[in-house]
Image (tube, rainbow, N blue to C red; front, side, top):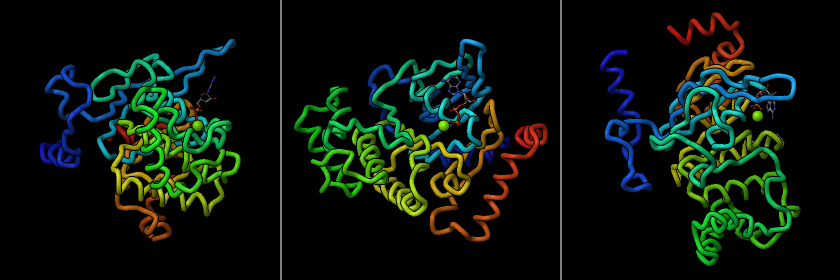
Length: 292
Ligand code: ADP
Ligand code: MG
């Protein structure tokens, strides 16, 4: 890589932001490091019969305010990667670092929104659902938590539904509550695992639009998993392409030029086709491309 390219890369990196962890801040050399670093991550499941390797030596960097997408076919280890970033699975190889520190377990700085509509405890009202992690993690007292919950419910257009129970909401509304709950925690990284995959096409598109609008306002850092090429192009500014099982990095693509407005354009279709080819071309050819 030339010096000029390096400078360009740095210029795209967001400015250094004060870290909330105080005096134990990482060494000066880490100042240019990405907010989230995934380095050589191999992840496995041990079943009674055998060990299943879910990902093999996956590396990528997520910078502050990135909308970074992990894209790959079903079973390639996307959810497993997200669980490792969440701190729920320990790597057999490699490391996840947040703010320069190795991730050793779950924490309120990483919140996950899942695909399933049943991620909200049904016995709590919408407002109580959003308040719960704030109170449980002792981030806020009940009064402040209630205020913040209402603020975020308002941002996702659900202030009127604060006192109803999740079963009274549609799938899209439940996902909005899950997003409000996650953003209310102000995580360093918002992790989303195919959050719109179970929605009908129109609602899915609406939710993508709303997520992007929220990002425009709040500029949170997003790590978003999907198996939809179109969704990756619309939601992401950068996309990591993963090979089929076990997941390896195939390529990384810049997608900040694309959004909902460009969906269907010739340029968008060409990018989608290129990603499709990269994802599904034979392993050896793809590996050569990544290394070149
Ligand atoms: P994706 O989210 O990309 O569809 P996953 O991360 O869910 O993929 O799974 C990656 C691989 O790990 C798959 O082969 C899957 O069968 C396997 N796997 C996932 N969860 C478990 C588990 N709890 N036990 C054993 N194997 C698992
Ligand atoms: Mg998955």
